[in-house]
Amino acid sequence: MTTALLVSLKLAAIVSAALLVIGLPIAYWIAFTKRRWRFLVEAAVGLPIVLPPTVLGFYLLVALGPRSPLGAAWIRWTGDPLAFSFTGLVLGSIIYSLPFAVQPFAASFAGVDRNLLAASATLGASRWRTFWRVVVPLSLPGLITGIALSFAHTLGEFGVVLMIGGNIPGATQTISIAIYDEVQALNYAAANQAALILLVLSFVLLTCVYGLNRRWSGWPWR
Amino acid sequence: MAVGAQVSSWPLKARIRLHGTPNVDVRLELPPGITVLFGPSGAGKTTVLDCLAGLRTPDEGEISSGDKVLFSSQRRIDVPPQRRHAGYVLQDLGLFPHLTAAQNVEYGLSGSDSRVRRQRAMEWLERFRVQHVAGRKANLLSGGEAQRVALARALARGPEFLLLDEPLTALDLPTKARLMDDLVAWNRENPIPVLYVTHDRSEVYSVAERVLVISAGRIVASGRPDKVFDSPQQLAVAHATGYENILDAVVIAHHADVGTMTCRIGPELSLECPLGPHPVGARLRVAVRAGDILLARERPNAISARNILPATITRLERRDMLVIARVRTGETELEAHITPGAVQSLELAADVSVWLVLKTHSCHALRD
Image 1 (cartoon, each protein chain N blue to C red):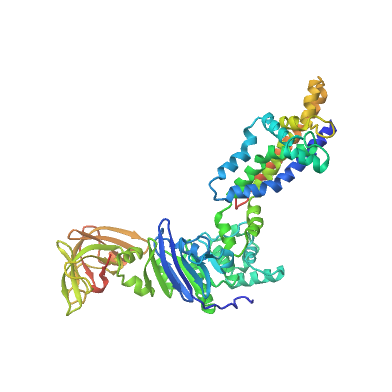
Image 2: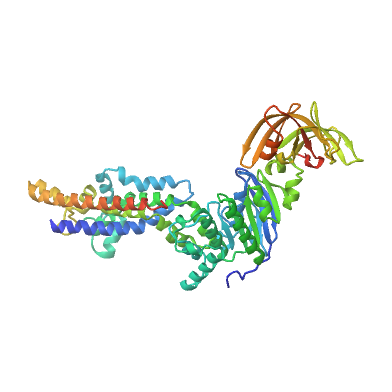
């Protein structure tokens, strides 16, 4: 059970870190682009929210499998298959949790007063500098929310992990799947223990997020 | 480059056409010194500033600062705002709320040594007398302090021209006056073109050497403030500069020998106006400032003013140190501004009969 918990925590940490890197540029584009087809990108990013995890997991499995171009290339490159591996799990989870990072990021970017961006430009600051010195500091609550939500969402995911990760203890067996296994084996005590850990962990995480955001919203410039 | 050492005396030239609300079509040529861009809200003032700063792209035109072309639709040049060397104080200032006053000023300064930048920022804050708030977050500054910090931030970069969008609105009068003095003093030492946007007539006289009147996206008048405001020639100028009385009229007689013409306003009302290039029979409008109308209880005689009209007060309305009197003469209603003292000593009230006295040169015949 501890192993499964560690796999989950490791997965969640890697995925939320990756989403910070991937999510920032996507969210920036969504918040500031003037392209008319922005809504298409928004819809694509948001898909994992509405799709059943099994549907998403199925397509991911096909995409990562040894007969897909990606899966085949991965085998040629590393010698290992992508499906049913921890790396495959990371890739799938990134896509699955993408909206939970991108949407709060984009919403907070869009909330930054455009006049500040104009002022920054007339003061000679490049877009890059404006982003780091003005947009990011004023979007901190949204960034923290996005990171925490993607962490928590990855921690609790079940369907996608089951479809593409298999159930390999120590490699791809996450805590939510371990709980399922214990219940199937009628081992309720162990299941309860793990479930309680997950419950407390998730609650603490969300409490921190909402607590922090409350403090920020109390800051006078918000 | 040392603080304030950059002295550029290059004029700023612009021809801007932009489709929008309103459509903007202006030509500007700004010498060093303060030029006021004056006009009612929605006339396109901010649009012009945004185009000059590079925040908006004109559909067509050309903008140059000295010998540098900043924008040219023909030559496909569009220098981004970062490299236009414009100082721009936005209407809402655009101070970064998460930074202190000093950090705001430092933000625009180049140079890698942070101690040097900090020191230059402090010098600028001192120059605008806000060094005491250097460590305060921008969102905690008072209105006047914030204006000064924003000005310091824009000027610290040594801009080649300065754009100010209603920089003094929301300030009380003494604060306004002090800040205007500082601005004028700074500009005297650093003669760069300054385009100062406002819709407040009183600010124009205090800062401007030149005024451009903009109305519905077009410059309708330009020149010295007293010339432009005190003798409008066009309807749009009279509207934009806030003439309270604008009356439909017909020229009925010329008196070339005395330099006047008679304009009929209504069946029983005619006004003597300065002789203008309007033929007899021409329809035009006559503008009269409310402050240029005198009220008398008895018919004045032996007086130089040519227009003396019987009237009745319909309403008196007090605003601060001013009384707005609505008076009716014939079928025409006029607005006159008088002092509370005059109301008292003449015992003016609604329904009281008075005589209106208007100098010929207070009646401005307007072209459309």
